[in-house]
Amino acid sequence: MASNTLILGLQWGDEGKGKIVDALSEEVYAVCRFQGGHNAGHTIKVNGQQTVLHLTPSGILHPNVNCIIGNGVVLSLEALDKEINDLVDAGINFDNRFFVSSGCALILPSHISIDKVRDKKESIGTTGRGIGPSYEDKIARRAVRLGDLGNEQILREKVELLVSYHNRLLVELYEEEPHDIDHVIAELLSFKHLHDKYCTDTQGLIYDWIIKENQSLLFEGAQGTLLDIDHGTYPYVTSSSTTAGGVSTGLGLGPKYINKIIGISKAYCTRVGEGPFPTELFDDNGKMLAEIGNEFGATTGRPRRCGWLDLLALKKAVFTNSVTDICLTKLDVMDEFNSIEVCIDYQGDQPVYKTFEGWKSSTEGITKFKNLPLKAQEYINFIEDFVGCNISIVSTGPSRDQTIHR
Ligand code: IMP
Image (cartoon, rainbow, N blue to C red; front, side):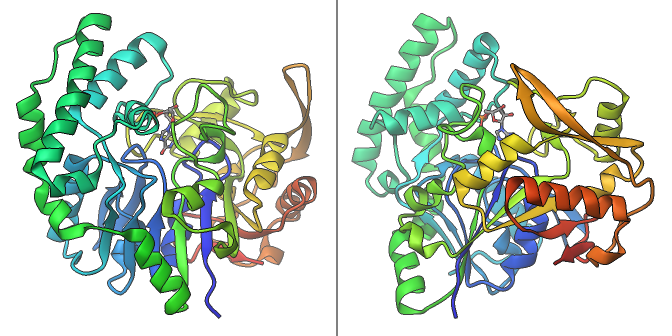
């Protein structure tokens, strides 16, 4: 029986989705990205070499798996071209298995300028990739889309309109340099090979694969639930729908075709960029989580803020996404702690914690739940009961075999 699975983050991104996506990718017909852009970062090893995928679905590493970038993704052609070239150099084939929606809104150089200058003033701590301004133009119905590269006349007209608008913002509002419109058009046309080779009706492909061929697909989320434009910690969020609803809008398929929803959460919590983080730690425990967990952003290299797990936020994320299974990652990072806290309530803005005794022994690489220290089992069982969802996968290390399936 074919079955489609969604994998998404339940926190502020960086939950360790990559390892689980990699493991499940080889069992499916296609892996599809539905939102975000090259703000995402997913570190993997290709032929022994460390690579970070920003745009390409991780299924690309498995030669028989197809990959889709859906209409919900905002696309930097420059970033895509570089990523494809790097992967082709590493021996990965893209021909006849990599497809990009003609509806993807393009990220132009002027989007990046606007993102950076605004973030200096408004300070959300964005990745500076032009993501917000690009979604803004999409919603305002003035975006240039990948399909527009098929008609140079239309492309010119649309880019002229959009970049002159951007230039007005940059010059008059932010006192920055304008972008040369002819130069922007020439640069876009220099990536026309990407349009010619990969641009297609991805919704039509997905329809054929699910309805006609009864294939199983994997939908790969980027960022996390708390960064969702509607359900996250607004305004400190990214500009896309990172939650389960984003699959339907970002790929063009109804919710009944999402059969299993795996939500990924760290055994603690991290966040990059600005914004509220009630359980953030500023003491030695926070430093320990950052050091042992190697908490640095995969896209920008920025240090991640670290704190205890917030079970109220997790419970809400389970509901928002109708999560069927939780995967708890980086349990082994907590091996050395004397005590571990989890937020179970709020008094005003202050988290109320339940304290667990630390297990103080290595869980690294353990593959059976019953072999975990009893105190670690207690911690996991408590989380499961509190949020009302099975924790059916526990990750005890970065390699694929360091995983517990319950
Ligand atoms: P933007 O997506 O670049 O607009 O950034 C908006 C917010 O989302 C900032 O706080 C970023 O740090 C955060 N963000 C964007 N992408 C990621 C990600 O892949 N992991 C973690 N945080 C992210």
